[in-house]
Length: 355
Image 1 (cartoon, helix red, strand yellow):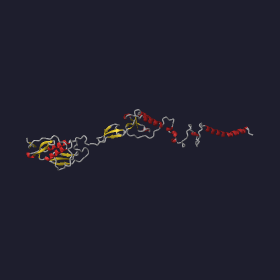
Image 2 (tube, one colour):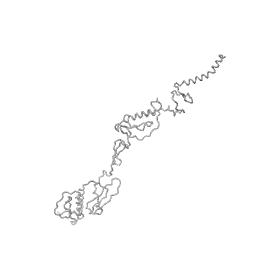
Image 3 (cartoon, rainbow, N blue to C red):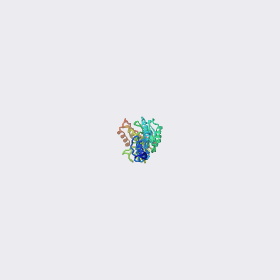
Image 4 (cartoon, rainbow, N blue to C red):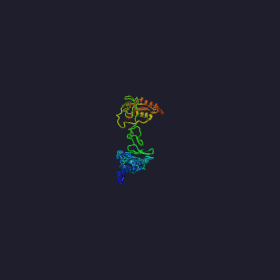
């Protein structure tokens, strides 16, 4: 028979077991979302009120993705958000129509955002980029910083502001002399472009006209018309002295202008006439009448006179050769009607006709 005293004793003995059962039931129903407790350590002191799954089994705060501001949807100034706003500012401020529409601003790579510089139009200000950089740094997003070179130029390429080429400090479309001193360069969006004409180191140097070019017959010691000369631009020359060719080789060539004369287009008829006059003028000197002679001029083909009073250094063959060259070159003009040949004499040291 169970007496009231025994009943009280049994109740006292069962009370701890009932309390334990009630505690377990309370812990199970505390999770309103009925999320299973997969924590093998059953650590209720670390219970996540937001019921976020625990992806960091080692409880290392450095490896906890919940500590990354980029993964915090409630953080309006997250690193990724600021980077996207920065990229949008650069993209929206890149439209242009001309090179003058574009500027170079300092970007925020010092805070780990963007690059060293940004090529943008006037719609973007330096203060705007600086504010984004400060916000990026204050959000704890700063990583590595940069080491920037000199600012590049800005160019409008296909309607967008871009970094310009390296034109040694010259602006787009600026022209400047080439280093060789004889070509012209321009700074383009692709870099420096220069003309490529051959340089003339003698450009601007005043030089006399060159004599005619020498032929195979113009050899040292050979017969020639007094006063005749031939040669090239660097100084290989031959001169007719006393009816004989005397030739010289050009001096050693060095840097700069090596020309002693400049080849020009000379009318062949005028050239032969000049040779004829030079031959006559250089063969007039005399000391006595016996030093002088009468030669037939080449007026029959339109060069010289009917007769020439010259010294013995000039021969009839010399004048005939010049007349033949004149005729073969198509230079023949009106011919002459000559009178009886006059006598010649030496008058004041010059061969001349007797009056």
